[in-house]
Amino acid sequence: MVYETLPIGNIVDEVINIMKPLAENKFIEIVVSIGEGISDVTADKIKLKQILYNLLSNAIKFTPEGGKVGITIAKEENIDGRYPWAIPGLEFVRFSVWDTGIGIGPEDKEKIFDEFEQADSSFSRKYGGVGLGLALTKKLVELHGGNITLESTLGEGSTFSFLIPVTSPVEPAKPEAVEAVSLTFPWMKEEAPLILVVEDDLPTAELLTLHLTQSGYKVAHAFDGQEALEKAKNLKPFAITLDIMLPKKDGWEVLQELKSDQKTASIPVITHSIVNNKELAFALGATDYLLKPLEKEALILKLEEITVVKGRKVLPISVLIIESEDKVTNYLKEIFEPQGFLMYTAPNGKRGVELATALRPGVILLDFTLPDMLCFDVIKDIKDNPSTKDIPIFILTERDIPVEDRISLVGKIERIVQKQAFNTKALVGHIKELEMLYPRRAGLIDELTGLFSHRYFQIRLAQEVERATRYKLPLNLLVLDLDFFGQYVKEHGEYYGNLVIEKVAELLRKNIRGSDVVVRYGGDSFAIILPNTVITARLSLSNRFNAIIRNYPFLYEESQPKGRITASVGLTFLDNQTTEEFMLCAEKALAHAIKKGGDRVEVYSREQDETEKVTWF
Image (tube, rainbow, N blue to C red):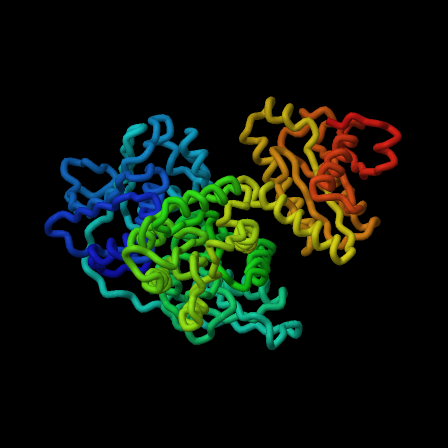
């Protein structure tokens, strides 16, 4: 604990400033009320802010759009033994974080602060998390000598209140100087990408350094938030790994300042913490979010993804149309909505800028001629705002744009599209390319497993088929389905079924090669694209996946017909089929494996298909 006397108003302002993007995304109002005579509090600054972050982010998460959340601060005294755990007469500062959200049932109030426990309602399951945030919050409050309580009514909202004792003012403590870790390895290349590791825990910094250097990256270190900002500006690293609980400036402040500064805004940042708060990380501009303890494979995978997309941020699959003519707007909606895009519209420039800031769409289609603003002013407003400057902009125009205007637009927009010669297929195709570059925010990641979704699979498989056909490269497709899995879920419930699905996804992900693509194909099925793979290797890989699942000790697997969780695998190779035919061949092979009793690999054969005349579906 590093105690210092802090102005309460400043602490609250800093926390609210960080949380605003989350609230604005849901049009939620944040209300603050500080009682009279309260100006300072003596506490550990980083830990107090972490408590408020955890409680406020939960309040926003569980409050519907258009609701309210707030912080109320007042002084309180332990009179007549009101708090038996505290000294009689002791003064406290009471912080109450309230919301108008879904509320918590009486049966869940007791266990809500336990580790790995969550409210057992359909609402809480919908919003996810691992149940560590409130447990950590309780421990941080108790470290201050305080206590935390909950009042809640289902359907009306919740109020979390915590007390911190009023103690004598203290000067800020000077943190101990930490020696930087400097490790060099013979396999590190001079031109290798530089990763800035921002971590105040020395053993964790050393472990991260070892992982990264073994994978061919160069490493620099920062041990507090202030040093992180300075080194990010001076070193201009390829990427940053950022711990959240840091001295001097916490990780959320660092992330916000990095993304607000033109010199550092484009640097990809991978944040990590013991508490899962992906929503806040993405709202502040993080490229990804990992949970501690960090796994080497997960970290290296994220850095490899960044390498592929050249460090650009992921984007949501939504389109904002800024266009004054309803006819054009409706035409564009007819194009994009059937493709699965989420559409927003603005009739003028002012409203367009407002919606761009509030919604942060994946792409903006902007009319060159607007009734209230010049197109250039709209672009300037969007590009000058740190939260919207990376959104690709397509200009829609009815006339050819002069050379001078085109030059002034260079670097600020993605493309100019002529309305008369509007190529629907080309525009949708281009946006789908953006979608493939940024799969997580594009909704192409399956929430349960973290694998690519079936939507991603369809797009990617079509690309791989085209590539393999054009360059005459081998391409294989494997579809894997868990045997009798419906029976397992029926006996043991959805919770344990999801645990099996998550573990199978993890096993597959850890055993594919760098060029392979694994996706969640269906409820209990997975697909793996194996590009550039010879016959012997594809069979070997298929049998390995089958054996890995069979040999893993899943919970309650003894109840299965074979006494284990097993999988059927269908394998096929590209032989001048269309993408749809290619998928169908893999499914036929899978159906054949299932028909033979499962726990086996079957390869699709045209000859076999013809001679057996099997009705597969």
